[in-house]
Length: 368
Image (tube, rainbow, N blue to C red; front, side):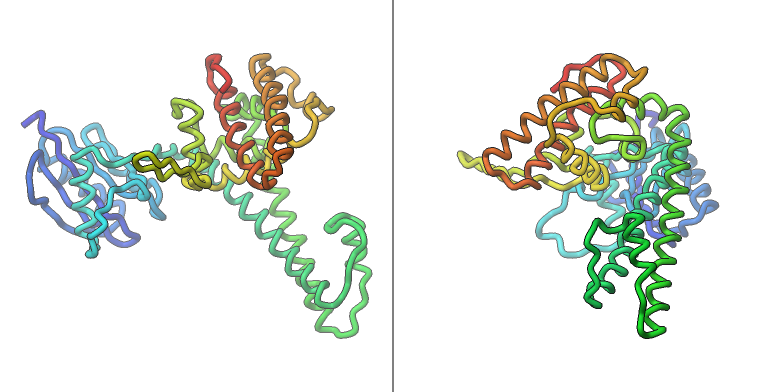
């Protein structure tokens, strides 16, 4: 019985855990339910180690409950895989879905090696990732606050001739006179929300800049900043979301993870490729597409980019220079073919991903 493997499927919810346990080639699983609490999870681990022979492998879907369950379950005898929900095989004719069925399905598919595990971050990596996401949330909040005030001014027929949200624009907004006291209250409230969110954003930016200067982020952030259009904040966001570029065996694997690869529906002699899959990490995909717009301009090394490259390895700088040359040439070629500009930016982002992958390998790697 030492070589028997026990498979445990867990359908995790906020309040309850539904367990299905298959020992070896057992046909019918043993199922039970317990509360999703730390003490209950510890009792579950002791029960599995006491009753299940051999190696124990547990599976549950990635979701809003995060990775706390995975950390509590993992012991020398128990391994826990967090499964990508979108990649779980599903039968088209299956119309009944219950918690116990889901747990049993995870155990059976795990035994058949048909589940795709995600790489869970460590506690430190997750903390930095949450900080980056909080910064992105603050950016979205600031955009919404500005939109509310801008739409109010538009409804009143007030237009600023210059560029919005500059110091001159703020002085113009402050100088406006309102006939009704209620309008003044609304504008003051919107301005207060903008000031508060801008202060939040500055504070979060300062914290991320501090983390970027410490290990293990200092070196890879410096490498990414050698690329045009990438500075400290965008580099930190990319690294915090992807954790370690070396876990991707090839640039294509990273492109597929970011959803930048083309979708395909081929059958027989017909080969059809469509738009990008848009799977995986949407936040990093958005950052890379925004960065791709910088490569429509002529290649060059400005003062800021030269300052960021100071003291960085020549290997990384060479890759970044090759990226500038190739991506600018590619951008202009597609533009000359009258391709839509957003489609061009996505294509450039896909190729930029390959250069970033090559730059962040610890050992010299071939540029795609």
